[in-house]
Length: 260
Image 1 (cartoon, rainbow, N blue to C red):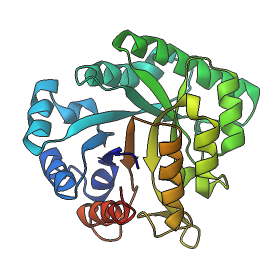
Image 2 (cartoon, rainbow, N blue to C red; image 1 turned 180 degrees about the horizontal axis):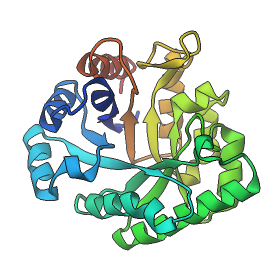
Image 3 (cartoon, rainbow, N blue to C red; image 1 turned 135 degrees about the vertical axis):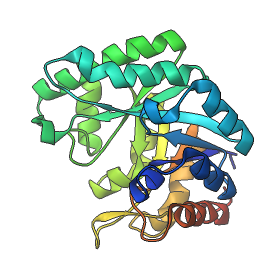
Image 4 (cartoon, one colour; image 1 turned 90 degrees about the vertical axis):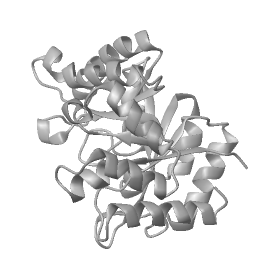
């Protein structure tokens, strides 16, 4: 059985408490038993790379990845400014993959070749920039975008040769796809994994083991072991009905119960 690098996403803290202190979130993530952290925060909140390194070192955590949002408007430079800034910032931590999501239907994009081409044009430009730091761009499948299920992933990859994937198990399950199957099928393109569950009754994401994936998480992890996956697995939860710490600890305990 593989010893995976398991991190936790700060998204839960940001959505639970506006302006939460990063140092407090890092302490709770360490206490919950994680090895590292993925951060979606704006660079202005992260401060200097040196300051963040100190905070991470104090908790014995690694920076697993940063998250970036890609818009598709008429100004490509503006659309990519935040993501390129995060790629440069992350390069100072030897991060291997920048998580990028985008292709929002709310921006007027549709599941058609024109929209996939426009999105991939942005993503390939970002990937070329990130490659200067030996970093990959891992695109995150997401509900309410043009990349929700396996079929959409096929359409995306058709228009990009440089793009890698961040497979989000919860979003795939919510869209009707089998996460373990998709992970194995697209193993050569996999650069990052977001591990989460989905409850169709409340139509929202829930802690690991509490949704339709449930015990199937073990199959997902076994599949990652089978394909010799070595990068980060990030436990993520958008919202919580308890506290971010309690949710993070519960999911980590669930993984421990499966031997991971």
